[in-house]
Image 1 (cartoon, helix red, strand yellow):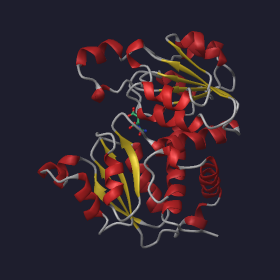
Image 2: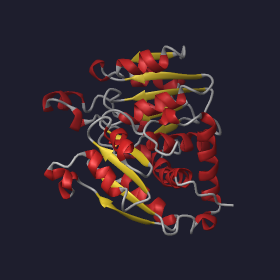
Image 3: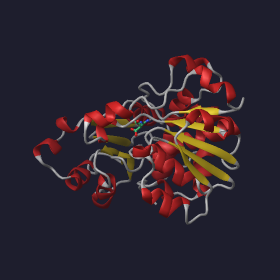
Image 4: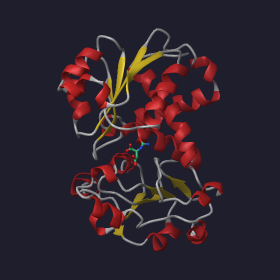
Length: 306
Ligand code: NCD
C-alpha cells in the first residue's frame, strides 16, 4: 500500500504500528528531525482547511522535509478546467508525496490512479477522512489506553460528516465497541455505514435524538459540526445547525473519564466553557494530528528511522 484513500486499507496491526511510531516521535522528536531530508510533500487543497493542511505541512517540516502546494482551487489550473488526474500526474513530477482534499467524493482515489507518488486523502466531500481518523485513534489510545471495550457516542451531522464515517469504520474492528449515533432525523449516518459496516459485523449500535439521555453511558463523545457546505438549501442548515450544543451543565451526568472529542472547526456545538473541563480532548486531537501524519508520511515514503 503506498496511497491512503480509505482507512480500511490499513490493517489494525498497521494502525497499531502508526500509533507506536507517533508515540515514539512524541517522546523523541530529535530522532526524526532529518528523516525526510530532501523529500517534498505537496498539499493540494481544493477545499478550505486549517488543521489538516497545516498539520501536514508542520509534519513534513518536523521531519526535515519541504512543502509545496496550493490551498484553494482558484489558484490552481483546476480553475482552467484541468482534471484531477492531470493535476496529480503533474505534481508527481515535483513532489514525493501528495496530500489532497477535494469537495468531490472519490477525487483523491482518481488522483492516486494517475499519480506516480503516494496520495493521501485529506478529506473527500462528505465521504472519508482517514488521517483525521488516525488522529482520533491516537488520541483515544493515549487518553484511554485502549481502542477496544468502549461506548462511542457520535453526535451532530452524521450524514455529511466525513470524519464520522471513517471513525465508525475504523473503530468497528475493535472488540466490544458500541456506537450511539446521536443526530436529528435528517442527519443520520448514510445507509451504507449501516449495511456495509455495522450490520455485517453484528456491531451494537443505536440511533437516538437526545444527547443528554445518551451521555451517562458514553466513554467517548465525538461532537461534529453541521456541514453547511454540503446542504442543498440554507433554510435546512439554519433549522438544524444548533440542534446540539454541549454546555458544562449537560456534562453533570457524564462519566468522570469521558473523552470529549471534535475534529474541529467547531461552530456552536461545544460551548467554550467546556474547554477547561479536563475531559475536553479536542485540542489534544489537533496536536496528535501532526504526530500521526508524521508517522504516516514515514510509512508511505518507506523511511525507516532507527
Ligand atoms: C473536518 C473536515 O474537514 O472534515 N475538519 C478537519 O479536517 N479536522 C471536520 C469539519 O470540517 O467539520
